[in-house]
Amino acid sequence: MNKFRAFAAVFSLSAIALVAFGINYVSNAESAVQAELDKNTRSVVIKGDRLCGTDHDPQKIAVAETDFAVRLAGLKDNPGLDVNGGVINVYFHVVNQGTGIANGNITDAMIADQMNVLNAAFAISGWSFNRVSTTRTTNATWYNGCYGASETAMKNALHQGTADDLNIYTCNPSGGILGYATFPSSYSSAPLKDGVVLLHSSLPGGSAVPYNEGDTGTHEVGHWMGLYHTFQGGCAKSATDGGDFVSDTAAERSPAYGCPGGRDSCTGSRFPGVDPITNFMDYTDDSCMFQFTSGQDARMDAQFTTYRSNQ
Image 1: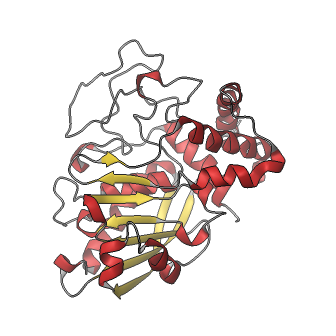
Image 2: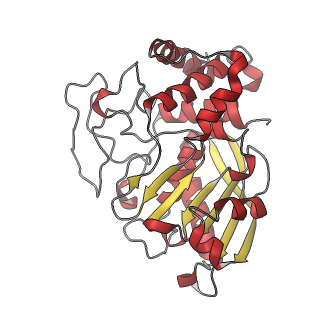
């Protein structure tokens, strides 16, 4: 059994539990499902404490995951559609308010370094990133309003490619935001909003210490590939709520900050082990993050196959 089909088989158990949880999927109500998905498209990280702005309402998550499980079940018997890695084209958009790095006009070297960080982080999962083009736009309104009022205008004007292409925007999100991303399941209803937005100073060599080594980009691309935070669901991570819907990440009570080695916030959990502080989907410092798990790899493959491949 290949990795994609194995993930589908395991994930179907969560789907059954989700239906029991009170979310009954009806195939002819896909538009209603999508409306709920649209409310949970952002994955936000806030500078300083990396606080998350994603809507973690369990009902909305259940809708998204039930939709995923049903779609996945329809694909698992067609191995020809199984995507287990590949090259993702990247359209990089630098939005600034003037000349110089301080105004968001990051250098070509910083962009190249960010691409190198992404390729190193995802290499073990079989994914790589090829920067096709770089655009540079001087627009102070977009630069300072890219998380909020100006997001739609900025993305409508700059977005390129289709569901399996990654658009990365660098700018100056409001409120100390480090970055945010859309999930794969949101593409069909809002294709021009698809992509990742990063604080320009979070790129390698930027000033957003200790988040200036490029792993805000890794974290947000992880969301774009379909991953949740490792601490989602807390110690209650179970077959019922799924937590991060990955079976090989230990349950984690809350986000980890800094690099707290040996932290075990959920002793006695059915997903035991020390907290996954080195995982790219936690909130630790960039210097502390260095891994995805095999379960996360399988989920990324399945999400990409289900929502991004051949769309």
